[in-house]
Length: 94
Image (cartoon, rainbow, N blue to C red):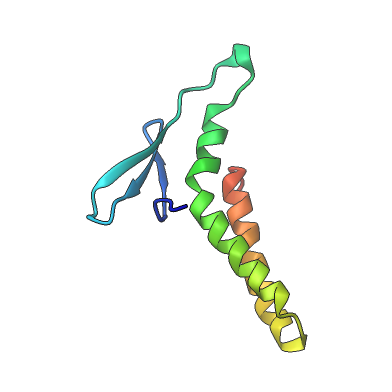
């Protein structure tokens, strides 16, 4: 399976990416919050927009954890920090 590489951005109620030809491409159209159904579309849009970054951070973390020894532990800390940053972005936290 192949997906459009990141970074993706949230703008005007949609999630956008760049095509291989540098064109702006809509990845997802996110509707506004509908209080009656209890779905926060903006939060969902942020999660979708950061998906490529989260995948990259988690894949790197899994690789590092598989190599753990004393020297690899220092590198793992950096990958963990990147994963935590991506999680905060997905949760709209600063």
